[in-house]
Image 1 (tube, helix red, strand yellow):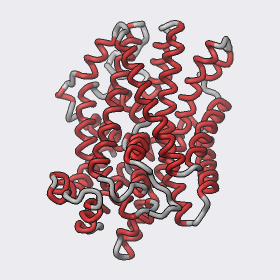
Image 2 (tube, rainbow, N blue to C red):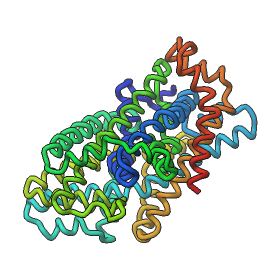
Image 3 (cartoon, helix red, strand yellow):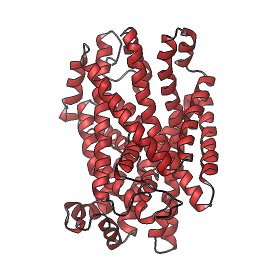
Image 4 (cartoon, helix red, strand yellow):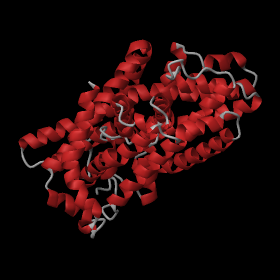
Length: 448
């Protein structure tokens, strides 16, 4: 590993960074919303199964490609290739992931900006600035652009500082804060009227809904989105891992943390919805569908917080700070993908590459803000429902069909010399080669 590239200085640093990338708005906002819209506990059960049976093997494929290549996503995949068509295939998959990450960041930064404005609103209200507080939580072009730019500025600031001083240092600070805030908020919601019904809906599955096609598609998409698969992120993070580390264990730990935090987020938000319902806020329509859908966080929860009186201001502040932290831990990984490509392939200084790429994505974000009614959903759907599953599937194809099995084994054995005799090695190679691409492809095809 070249000194100029940098790398994670510790196992804990990588786990926090990779878990930070995986744990974002997809877990704390998207997962509970999807759960409420798709049968509650039945969705949770399917999500857990798919996260370990499909997302984890694909996650391992990306980590292994990255650590073997010790470079950006495109270069890492091309190092594995043995002929011209494989190199071209590697370029398409690696560069496709980079484009996917940039597209996700372009809409993600807008939503993260909203989270930040909602976090500041309770402080403005406590200080007596009612007009400013109302402006912070009402959609306007100026507010949306300002907070999108502010969030992107924070992301650029961290990535400019590099792997150890930027990504690792801030992930080790932000992730413990996120987990601590989440647990405190769950404990508080436990004490409120209506929470018990929410816990029941969240933890008791209706098994008859488990095989519903829409539920399966939503759960698979959620598993891939929350683990940052198909975006080149885990390839580049894998390239920063020391050769002595046991990748099988590391990958499992990151997946477990990601799934656990998604589960905890559901423990917070689903009961909070039922608490709001007990206070008179409409949550579900007559047909049982979720009224607010993707706007749940910006409609139902603020209504709940406002019904708590003065204490609700502090709870609202804690909740939206939590959301902002989750967004930031993910956004830094999404910017690192394209930055590492430009730095290494075009010999550009990191500070310059980060600034120009970050500003370029910000321009796209502003374009989305100006055309918010149609463009936000379009870019989100294009990148998360189509781009991510396709790229993740192609990564599995690359690892399973292009990369020699003996080379993969040699790479894994550098951190785990006995892996050849483990259950992981007996299952993972053929599973990644046949099961993962087929299952992802079938679910994707059905979604069309």
